[in-house]
Image (tube, rainbow, N blue to C red; front, top):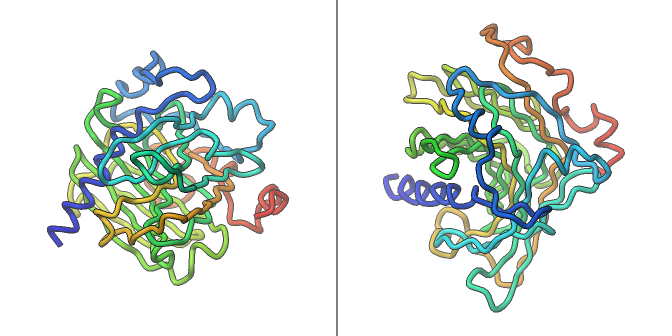
Length: 297
């Protein structure tokens, strides 16, 4: 167990470096702007502005609100460089992973993040993760030294070696806690709705609207710092194959994200949807949302 926690801590410490990505549109280094600094400095009272993103290629808000990663990623736990053309918005977000030759890392993958920070609230996404040993599909909030704060993070992850389970993790000041939760279905078979509620005293994780895990302050410290919202697909280095599984050199994969949304916390603690603003605009279970059916999900 101690070895598992150590490996996981090393993996997630890599997100600090991963978050320092390049703006693929402008080709410039993604430094902190005044709005981002102000958002992080508001501390515990910040919730952020709610949004829903369906990743339509024609939507100008997509270009303004999100940033793709484009850089060589030098971290021993990752076998993946980031390429903007591997995160494609076309009536849903396609995160792609392909092998590459002649580079330190054996693969290129897709990663996208929200440009502005968010905080307490409900985070939802319609995801069909990639299947395959060594592949990780992630949906998470992150902040850390790159953004001038301590490392706080909340994760939904799918390990391609076992997509019948979901990996739920959270960091407080760089310290990892994690649970693996059986889903009762194969997440890679079809797009489904996943979510987590981030509140001052607890975090709840959901699959298809069903509560599958709740942790509270009684379980230990909880993340407090506003963070950036990410989705990505990556191949793990062989050194952590015991956790992730082992890729093959010719492996390629795709993860689909039909929608991502954030509904800010209202300050209520009723345990119902009224605790969150704008839940009527949140991502929905596929089949209940016509725009997802039309997108081929």
